[in-house]
Length: 415
Image 1 (cartoon, rainbow, N blue to C red):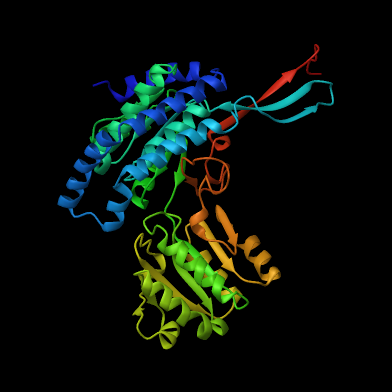
Image 2 (image 1 turned 180 degrees about the vertical axis):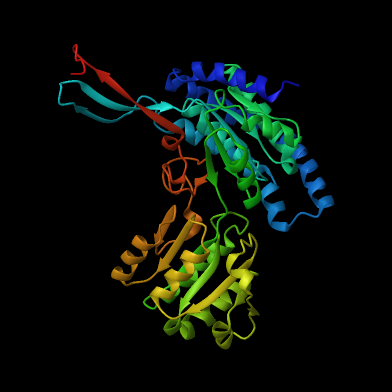
């Protein structure tokens, strides 16, 4: 088994070739990778079964098991995301801006590949395929280091893509996978400044913190999703119920599912009974404050810890608030900056919310579950950057590139 340093060295060589590959060649490789996944569903499910069995023995949560599980439908979706990446415009070489400098130089800022990207992540095997596809399309080599809970699933997915991509013309080593569960391998990976250009960290608080503190390479963080929906006094009740149910029940184990709902007090008597009926039918446990339980006594009493808990399950925290300012204060105190929403027919209140809540994605009358590359129309996403530095939000094809200045002169010199 090659060491992490050897893998990174090979990835660096591959990145030089990838950076100048024409779009047609990268697209052909992505199509071949998608075909390999679709043709090997049985092998993927068999590998995934090993991870699921190990997870049951360890007693991991139902939400984590859902993130981990692969079936034919999910494999076909992963293959479809690779095809979607192939269908997108190639960002490499795109001129972002062009102008003429005062001294007559022809200036342009042009999109370029980042180089070699390392990704350290937990649980979800689709991260393996989505990030590999994005990196290939953006001209980057990738080194994948998934969590031990998905070691078999990630291994077979990475192998299938690497073999299919190489056979279709990708340079050897463009897609690398760290096979060992040894934590020392992560430490080695995070120390390879000069070979690796960017680390993407996806997972829980402890993982993000450990990677950020250890890495000698710039880290882009896909942090936890403490998402909020605020049902403003001027909300359409029917819309609020639909959006809240979708944001919690559609797939509760994802980071963009809502964790806390805030309801304006004047709306509570009308909204909460209708919401309670829909949430009960969806199997959702509501942990509510005293004011909400006066309207719906069957709900469980919320604790202070619930306002900071990413449940990632069919559990929803709910609080009645006394107006817009209290809702803003609660969100600012407890959110993670991934996605937050307001439901209202009051345009002035909505615009104030959009300006005051500086999340990676801030919504007016829409579900936080939409926070992803495909719903945004930018293709599959490698993660959602919750840092306040560019590129913030879902990281699609363009966000997986950097840029540089290209200057065409006619003999200009510095005076």
